[in-house]
Length: 79
Image (tube, rainbow, N blue to C red; front, side, top):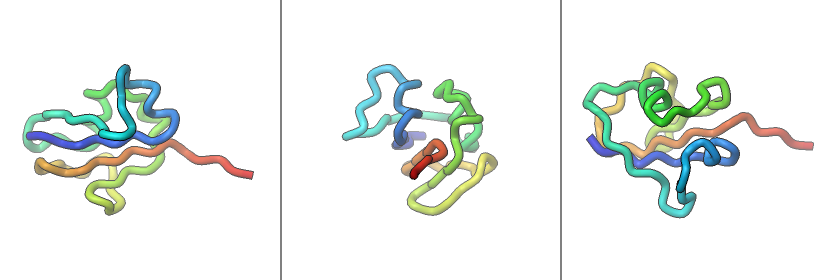
């Protein structure tokens, strides 16, 4: 099942060739969780602090159904 994965800030550095203008098209088996997707992409899970699926906050155990937009964000600092 196809997904559109959008990576923010420093998470982009972990996926060679990632284009922030188009995101990343990924095909995963039906029933894959967000955690499984992060593992597939070889992203450091400890760096992912916010998960959004189709614009709604999600968790590591959210089961993906296909055709979702999954956005992953690291922690954000400010000052």
